[in-house]
Image 1: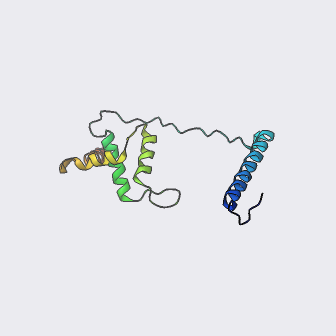
Image 2: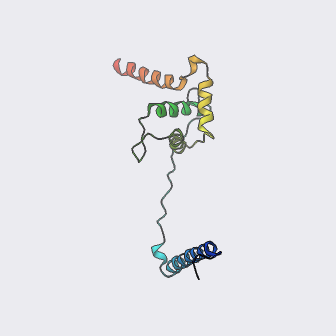
Image 3: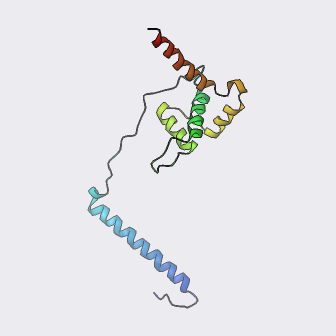
Length: 142
């Protein structure tokens, strides 16, 4: 097959590259047929958490978890494998997996946090702070 400068040169070059790709794929398929053990990847067990958020929780519903995700994201101190702060969506996926929930769109849930009245803006974080303070007082009074 000529790949000269004729009027079909580009078409011929494209066909040549396509055939080369097909040959490589056929070679890989042949290797997989003859040596299947080399192509079997071990099945990694999917992580399944035993943790669930109480659906109609007074202080910790899905918007409450979104509030925590937002706070951690804005803090910027949760990092990924690359050493850089993770995105809001990545952080949300981690919480979804940890607590067996689905945000749908984390951005919509975060918007719902900001729609709250000013005194309820950090409702969940305030409830968590109060729970820790209550436990602190209880431990000091023992």
